[in-house]
Amino acid sequence: MASPSSIITRNMPDIAVKTGNLYQSISIISKRARQLSAKQKEELSNKLADFASTVDNLEEVFENREQIEISKYYERMPKPTIVAIDEFMEGKLIFTEPEYVHIMRQEDTMIDAEE
Image (cartoon, rainbow, N blue to C red; front, side):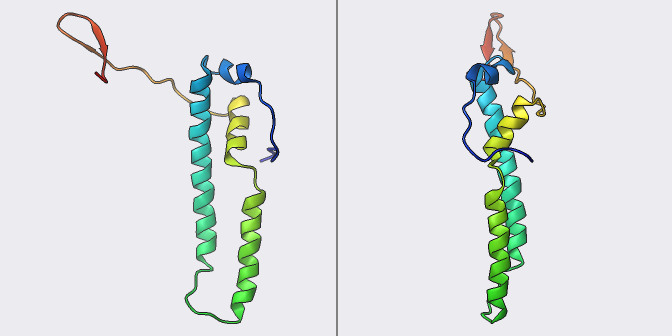
């Protein structure tokens, strides 16, 4: 992904336009960032699991170099939040608006299901 790794000033109204609500847009972006972060963490854990060893030996120095290179690769990757913002702004994310569940009382007044 070609996302920059430095801080970028974002125009808040541009973010809000996609959903009509800034807070809903931020919520969508944060959920996507958590998905990306969990995926990266799982990939990194799987790659580093190969290096798990209970025995100390001379080959460990070479393995540590490989482990360090893998870790550096993941550190250089764009942060999940930046990727999520870019995906959101480019319209690459599919999201649905939550519908409020309403329950009808006998008096025919609408109430939220949370009550």
